[in-house]
Image (cartoon, rainbow, N blue to C red; front, side):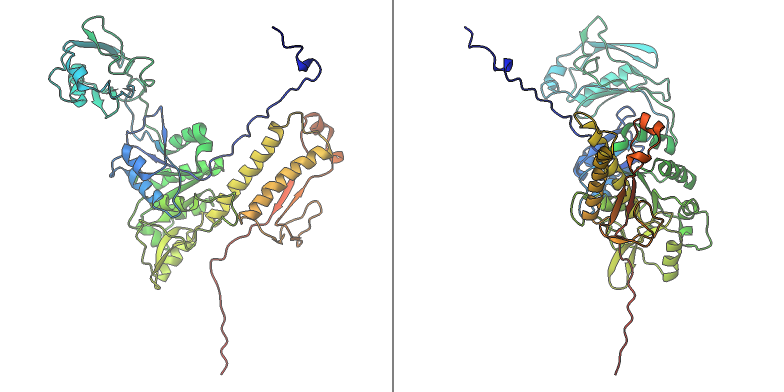
Length: 491
C-alpha cells in the first residue's frame, strides 16, 4: 500500500561526497636493501614495525637484521622500517605455496597419503611426481624432503607456514610453474597449496642487479613509501656508492646513507675515500658516516632523524649532539676530527667529558642533513596541499585573482606549519627580492608568498589554464652547533 507521494517531488536533496585527500610521501621510514633470499624479487619489500618482526623473517646474523637493530635502537624509536631485496647475484625461479591452516598442517592427514602425485614444470621441463609415500614422516619437513628427492635437482622446503619449490638454475630462464594434478594416485597439488588460485604468483629468476639498478626499481615502484635508503651489505665499492648517491641526487625526494670503514678517511691527504669522492661532487641528498666498529652505522643515523613529527610544535631537529645506541663511539685526535669535518663526513665521537655525540650531521655538500630532510618535507607538503585544493574542489578554482589567492592561502598554510614545527622562523632576507620583498627586509612571519596579478599573465598561459607563477621566500630557523664565550675577569 502506498505511503503517499515521495517528498523528493517537492524537495530534492543530493549529497556529493568529496574524494579523500591525496596522501603525501612517507617521510619517516627508511628502506634497508639486502641480498638475503628472504623476500623474493616479485614481493621486493616488506614493512616492519619492531625488531621482533624483523627477527621472525631474518636470522640475527643477517646483515638486514643487524642494520635494523641499530635503526630500532634509536630514541625516540622509529615506528616503521622497510627491508627490500637486492638481487646481488642472479636469482632462481620459485613458487611459494599458500599459508596452510592448522587443519591442513595436521601430520595425520599427510601420513595417510601413500601414493601422492602432482605435476610441475621447472625450467621448461615438465616433472611428474608419483608414488609419494608420507606414511613414515613425522613433520612437514619430512614431506618436503620426500618431494625434493623426487624433484631430482630442484629444492622443496617447508618454511613453517608454506611449501616452497625452487629451481636449481638462476637467471631469466629459471622458472617454476603452478602445480597441477598428474591424473593418477592421490593428488596433493592443492594440499601443498601450490595450485593456481592458492599459491602466490610464480617468481621467475632474474639476472644480477647493480646497486643503482636495484634502487631505481624501488624508486619506480615504492617511491612514496620511504625516504631513507641504505644497503645492508659491505661489498659495495666506492664507485657503486657514488653511482647510487648520484641517482638519489637526481631524484631529490630521498636521502641515501652510506657507512665507511676506510682507514684513509682519517688521512687528510686521501682524496679517494668515499667522503672525499662525494664531497667533490657536492652531493646534497646523501650522507657518509665513518665508523671503525660497525659497517651499518648509517642505519642509526636514519633511525634518529626519521622520527620527526612535522605536524607538531618545535619538533624539527639537528643531528649534531644526538646519540647512536649500539654504535661504539670513536676516540679521535683533534686533527682526525678536523679531517672528517673537512671531508663533510659524520662520526659518532667521544668527548673528554664522558659524553659521545653525532658530529657533524652534514651532507657531502656541506649542507646539514636536517636542512635537506626538512626541505623534502616542505616541498612535499606544499605540493600535496595544492594538489588537494584542486582535486577536492567540487567545481573549480577559477583562473582569477581570487582563484590564485586560494592557492596562495594554501601555500601560506604549509609555510605556517613549517614555522610551527621549527623549520622556518622570522629573520632577515639576504637574497634577491621579488614582489614587495627586498633584500635586507625582515620576514616577520618567517615566510612571504607572492602571487602576481592575473592581468600580468600571458594569453598562452591563460589558454593553457595555468596559474600565475607563485614565489615563496622561506627563512630557515637553523640551529646552534658551537658557542664562543669571551669572559673578562677584573680584580
